[in-house]
Image (cartoon, rainbow, N blue to C red; front, side, top):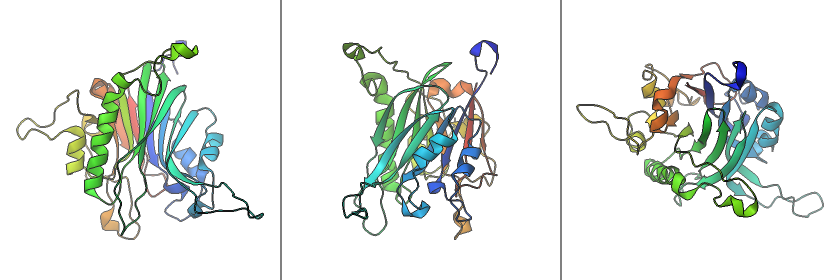
Length: 295
């Protein structure tokens, strides 16, 4: 960090952790922490507590311990109790939670867990999805960061989730986030910044209907535009996506491997996007981290 406490760039990263289980089938939370080391703001998805696939680990506590220089918030999208009881026969209160997490070098002064629409799907598992909102007091000014995880099976459901997400994100300056009128309780009024970054696993490919629903359909002659009412895909701002890029690997059907993790920025931030890259070396999940650098 330069002298005087100012920052020249802000580094953000998003990583779907797949419960901390890598493609080798091994749970290793240290690999997740190492992959996001050096980021100022971290958005994680598929963070769990009491999940059988990682031996019931409390990933929230584990990540907080491995990343002690970061403030953190967690939002459980899915929260269920399948009747777990202790050895004494009494309720164990070990709730299976799966959700999103945001960590920041700078204070997270408020957060909200925005539950996204879902349908009653019966032939495939359908988890409640969410976007975790965090108001970060960055040195460059307050910034809203969202850790997002959309449905992976149904296009119709993703479209509904995107519409709802955008509605809530753009309503923030009028809603005031988690609290307004805080002076009544002796607290300072929180800022209501327009600027936001959406980070996460959107389970859609570039150019898909959902992708166009997020960023707006490009004009057939003039192409995509930067407008106030649509988020902007940072991949497009940073020179496009190299051919063959992928952020998720399907180990059983390699032909399904594709790019589904993104960073979208509010239009005012478009000019600040300096770079975006996919970390192809990380091995702690079936996803790859996506790094965004803002000037």
